[in-house]
Each structure stands twice: as C-alpha cells, then as structure tokens.
Image (cartoon, rainbow, N blue to C red; front, side, top):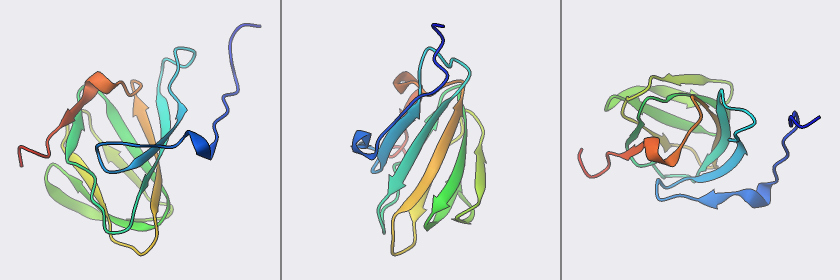
Length: 125
C-alpha cells in the first residue's frame, strides 16, 4: 500500500509567520490534493495581517479563545470556541484576538493552501 492515510504532527512543528500568527501544518500534501488543514494560534491583543488567498476558499473552526473576524474589511462578527467562519476565495480577511488567552483555530483550505496564493493586503488598507 503506497497511499498514506494517517498523517502525524507535533506541537513542536509550530512556526511563526509574517502574518503575526503561529502555524502547525496538519495536512498539506500531494497525497491529499483536495484540501489542506492547519492549526493557527494568535496571541492576545494581536491582529493578523490583512490578506487574501487567490482562488482558495478557507474555513476557520475556532478551538479556543475569542476574537473579531473581519471579511472584506468589515467586522463579520465575534468568534469563540465552536464557531465556524467561511471565507470565500479572493476575499480580504484578518482576525483579531480580543481575549486574554491564545486564539486557536483550524484553517481548512480548498484547494490546498500554497504560498503563492497568499496576497498581503496590510500595506494597501
């Protein structure tokens, strides 16, 4: 059997991004070309950089913490554990941690996230 069905990650795989969050790539592999999955962590008082993903739709599933979600430069709403946010492809987005603890969420992208899809809008707004 050559196809990989189980992918493992560890918290030590977390890395900081210029977007002002910390990421653990859970699944972003040629063996799963349909979608990608990552865990993001935003520290208290931090807003991620405004950005969009070209031709990539994204969903956030909030695991812990609280925040404000901005879509198309508008406050889309307040988020907390158990909330899901749909972000259409090619749409400006950022999230701000409004709580006292880390804001942690899953990022599901389809098609899979690729660095060339990321467009930084923080200098244009």
